[in-house]
Image (cartoon, rainbow, N blue to C red; front, side):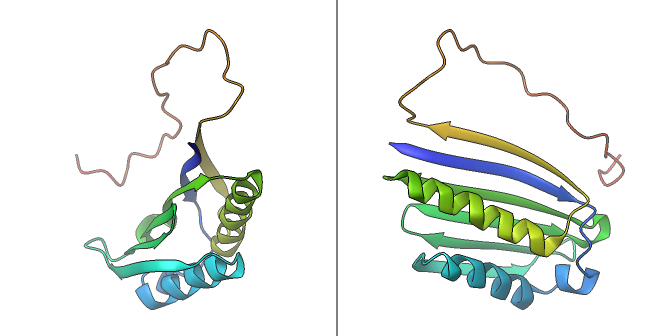
Length: 142
């Protein structure tokens, strides 16, 4: 199986705080981008989170997007997964992620990509411990 999975955090988003708190606005934005790429949506759910942000998901055949906003930090976490039978599907995922990122207008992004089922695996690949990529800890409870 060929698939690609992005886990990312967009920091310093210049989208309005009100928009980051509005499930209907976030849903409309995500659905618009998914539909623009001709992906049939099987289901979606967007709701206000306990932290005054939004948590939402869109599910499609062999694809999901999970998005969570943090208005107090002007941040968005995104999880985008797609299983693919063709390289064009992987290209669509790159475009979808880029389009969403453009709308949230982050000043800084962190993105982790995992790709499965590629024909050319790196020989001698060894797992490594995750590294800390951000010094932001002020939002965490002490």
